[in-house]
Length: 484
Ligand code: HEM
Image 1: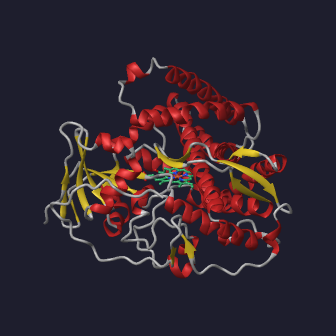
Image 2 (image 1 turned 135 degrees about the vertical axis):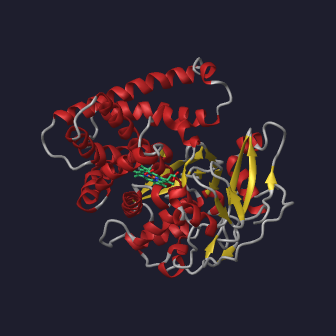
Image 3 (image 1 turned 180 degrees about the vertical axis):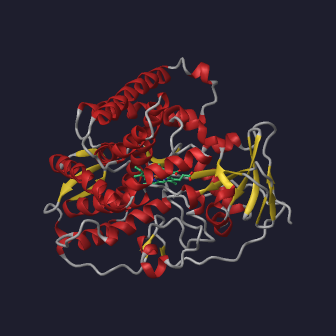
C-alpha cells in the first residue's frame, strides 16, 4: 500500500478559495501536476482526487456498487427535491426502474419523434432571424427546453411551457449561486435574487402540479415519461407522498434534460464558428444527404462534450474500504473525479486543447481507454438520457447545418464558467445566415486528416495511454496553466 500526496492548502479553507476563483483551471492544474490519485482539502473536508482512467473505471464501473453519490449532491435538493438524480440506495433503484422504460425501445423513438416539432420551430425562428444577431445561448436553451417538454411531458407552446421557461431562467442561476454560496442560507434568502427565485419556484411547482393532476385524470394511455410515472403511482395506490415524488421527478428531468443539451449545443456551434473548415465539412456531409443525424454531427457533439462536458465534476462516497492505485480508501471517504480535467489530460489525449471530431471516428475511438471519456458518467448512475441526448444533438446540428451558418460577432471574449454545468459566458452572440447566402458549400470536401487547435498547432488524432504513473509524495499544486 503506498502513500498518497496531500494538497492541504491553507489552514481552515484548504484550497477552497483557489477552487472558487476558477474551478476549471484549478482542477486542470492539480490534475496535470499531480499523480493518479491524491488528497485535496477543500474547507474542512478532504477528498481523494481520482486522476487516471483505470482508477476512474474502477470507481464508476468495476466497483460501481461501492461508490455512491456523495452528500454534496444534496445541495441541488433546493430545486430537484429527492428525485432520481440525488436519491441513493433502494429509493434510487425504484425510481430508476420506473423511469428506464421511457428511454428505450419504442418509447425512445416516440420521445425522439415528439421533440422534432421543437427543432422545426427553432429552424423557423432562425429563418426569420437570418441576417441578424441572436444569442446562441438563449436559443439553445429555448430549443432544449422545448424538446424536453414535448418529449417527456407532452406539452408544447402552452401557457404552462411559458411559465416553466421563465421560472427556470430565474432558478438555474440561483442553483449556480447556491453551489458556491458563502453567506448562510438565512442571510442569502433576503437578497433580491433569492426572493425572485422563491417566487419562480412557487410558479414552477404550481405548473408541474397542474400537469400532473391533468395527466392523473387523463385516461388516455400516454407513453411519455410523465404518463409512465403517473400511471405507476396510481397503480401502486395513490398516497400523500405521490404528488411530491412526481413533482421531484418531473423537475429532475426538466433540469437534467435541458441544461446539459443547451450547453453542449451552444459550445458546438461556438467551436464550429471558430473552426470554419470543420463547419464546412459538416455542411458538405449533410447538404443533399438524407438522414436525421449525420455521423459527422455525432462526432462533433462528442468532441464538444470532451472539451466542455456539462457534468464537469462528479463526486462519490465509498461505502466500504477499497484500494485504488495502491492507496487505501476508507469507508466513508469522499472522491472527486473532474471530468473536465480528465478530458483534457495530456497523458490521455494528444493535442488535448484542440477541437478534433476525428478522435471519434470508429478506428480512433476504439483506442480511447476505458474511463477516459465520461460525458454521461458511467456505471450504475450513468445518464439515463444519454441515447436521446446523442440523437437530439446529432439531429439539431445536422438540420441547422443544412440551412444555416452562425458567425461569431467579433470582439467577444467567451470563457467557460463552471457551476452546476459548464456554460459559455457571457452569452454567445452570432449572426445567422441562410444557405444560398453562403456560396462555397456545394463543393465536396475531403475528410480531414489533420486538425488545427485554437493555438494554431496541427496535430493528429489517436490517443494513447501510458501505464499508471507513480504518485509522488511531494507533488505540489501548480496553478499555472494555459486556458484555450
Ligand atoms: C448532452 C446531454 C447530457 C449530458 C452531458 C448529461 C450528463 C449526465 C451525467 C454526467 C450524469 C451522471 C451524474 C453523476 O454520475 O453524478 C447524468 C445523469 C442523469 N441524466 Fe443526463 N446528461 C445529458 C442529457 C440528459 C437528458 C436528455 C436527460 C433526460 C431527459 C438526462 C437525465 C439524467 C438523469 C435523470 C440522470 C440521473 C440518473 C441516475 O442517477 O440514475 N440527461 N447526466
